[in-house]
Amino acid sequence: MTPEIEAAFAEIEDEYGRGSIDRVTQMIDPATQNRHPLQKDAKWVMPGISRLPWHDPYGHPEIAPVVRAFEAGHAAIKEELAVAWAERRSRFSDYEHYLVRQDDWQALYLFRAGAPVPSSEPLVPTAYRILRETALDTDKLCPLLESHFSTLLPGASIAPHCDLWNFSINLHLAVDIPEGCGISVAGEARQWKEGECLLFDYSFEHEAWNHGTRPRTCLLVDLWHPETTLAERKALTVLVTEIRRLTGDA
Image (cartoon, one colour):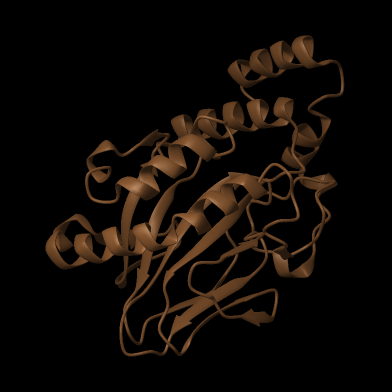
């Protein structure tokens, strides 16, 4: 660890108590890594988090209000997104996953690079408002990642992969779902149902596909994993931000 990280960690332990971020420091040590085989390609796996690929979207009191709000707003979100796609297509970009960039996987960002994307608010005001009120203002959104509309064009697929870590969790609101679409996490395939959310730990290997005849769109929100503590979230934010600064990653 760098002196900056060590100093920040010491401040966090002074505030929250000795041992409050032990799981974070253990995560950094390769000797302590003990992960599920289907998490083998994740960069970090913090110990003590349930090895559960799929989660009940209503099963966590911290996340359930976010789920309810997005599901309640689905009709308006879908309508606004359809207008943006038809009239402001240039605002969508190729999705830049940390592993690959695909021109048949389009994104409209609401939160990125540690901050909201205000230029998206006029295009999709309902989704932007719900994200701000339920996830950003409540500190449930993981600021190290993002929120975006994810559109897979017909025939597109996302190859099996693990995302970076297990201390955040991925919420999908099914916005516009044609037939022939699905997602598999840790070998278990499911289908999106329009207006409903899926919740999964994307440190587990997962893939998705659109075998339909029109675009498939979900709203993706990267939330803190509900099994992490406030102290750990502060330490993880310091750790990842400093590493990105040193490596020049965005």
